[in-house]
Image (cartoon, rainbow, N blue to C red; front, side):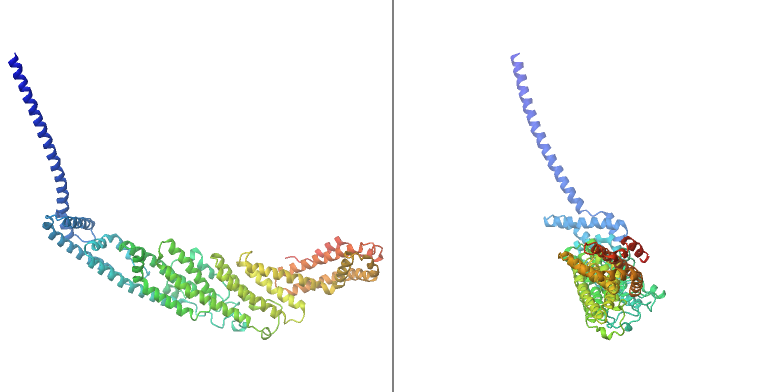
Amino acid sequence: MEQMLGAFQSDLSSISSEIRTLQEQSGAMNIRLRNRQAVRGKLGELVDGLVVPSALVTAILEAPVTEPRFLEQLQELDAKAAAVREQEARGTAACADVRGVLDRLRVKAVTKIREFILQKIYSFRKPMTNYQIPQTALLKYRFFYQFLLGNERATAKEIRDEYVETLSKIYLSYYRSYLGRLMKVQYEEVAEKDDLMGVEDTAKKGFFSKPSLRSRNTIFTLGTRGSVITPTELEAPILVPHTAQRGEQRYPFEALFRSQHYALLDNSCREYLFICEFFIVSGPAAHDLFHAVMGRTLSMTLKHLESYLADCYDAIAVFLCIHIVLRFRNIAAKRDVPALDRYWEQVLALLWPRFELILEMNVQSVRSTDPQRLGGLDTRPHYITRRYAEFSSALVSINQTFPNERTMQLLGQLQVEVENFVLRVAAEFSSRKEQLVFLINNYDMMLGVLMERAADDSKEVESFQQLLNARTQEFIEELLSPPFGGLVAFVKEAEALIERGQAERLRGEEARVTQLIRGFGSSWKSSVESLSQDVMRSFTNFRNGTSIIQGALTQLIQLYHRFHRILSQPQLRALPARAELINIHHLMVELKKHKPNF
């Protein structure tokens, strides 16, 4: 038993040893397996990256570039070329087996892509009627350019240079042609250097009469011209010159400017965004490429504008163009296209000085106008003040939509000159009453025109309102002076005596007071009637005349009421003539009958 158990124990120890050996062998086999699997994975990736499948070869060699499978296999070819370059850098010998095949496929793909894109670029040269180049059709093939950029930079540069050269010529040709045709539908009669605010009325019969041309706007009046900067008109479709010519339509310069620059804005935004996406550029590089394409067109447009402005004397047109530019600049910013920023600045640098010059010419023309050379005097609104009112209200209403302090300063200078001119003309009248009638008529007319377009709280409206109120009050006093001057003088003297505590001195005025009471009682009705007729004859604005009559009657009632109060003083209370005083309420009822109805 001992021997048998010993043998069994010996066998068990040998089995245990074998098990340990097998475990060691199993562990080693597992490690070898994992290593081989890892190697297989790496080799698989390498082989997959290097092997060129037949589908790729067929698609690159045979498929048209417009087919989806060509684009798919081109992306595959690009990935394989990148993988081979990476492996070559690591010294992988297997790359040599596929380098030749990939190079031939790459050359073929580059050739096909080059021909296709150049053909597309050349197709843009065909005449188009809508002044829009369909370069955005190339965007679905933008990977083609990306492939060239990574695999054949010389061809990529050739395509980019060809695109720049072709599009630069096309844009220049299109815009030169469009601009030429556009200017043919401008109004034939435009403002000239003699069409200034201070020039004699005979020089331009059409200023405020019916324009001689159909739909022609007058020089100092805005009319419907301001609609060009409303949101609907601003981004309306561009004008088509040949259609306008067929319909014998004519447009002011600002409408042509809007159409030309809206086309420029639209195409520039489209061009800039296309360049960024297709040629894979941004920042300064995108800006430079954009100006390589559009630079000549923008320069040509600036030269044309500069040439036109040199002989332009239409301040409203120039001012509207300034506001068109300010709005288009905002639109470009919203579309995230900064490439036109410098162009807008250059346009404004041409428009602002011209606008200021025309305004200064008008200021000077008003300043140098001699009232004595204007012919017969007339108390009605002067044509120069009417022109100023129309012109000022036009600029103020345009400026309110996009406030600009520079404009307000220029208008302030013009306003000062017009106010001085009105005073110079008024001084030519012999009587103060006529002077006041002239001033009130002119202030009222200017205020009325300004309030139609400008805000009620604008500086111009406020200034003329104060002038009108002051002159109206003075006129009312002047109006009441002939029929009721004695009464006015007595009331003022008596009130001064009472205020100084010298009421006793009123006892010596009984005869004068009696005469005033009887004189007023006998003549006030005829005096008021005459006064009303005089006012209605003197003022061109019926509403203003009505207001003046109302003010005069109100002042007359207040005067008579003060007269009553003086007569109630102890010194005059026993005066027999007091019984002849007209009852104040009766007077108010009677005066209401003379109040004109509007």
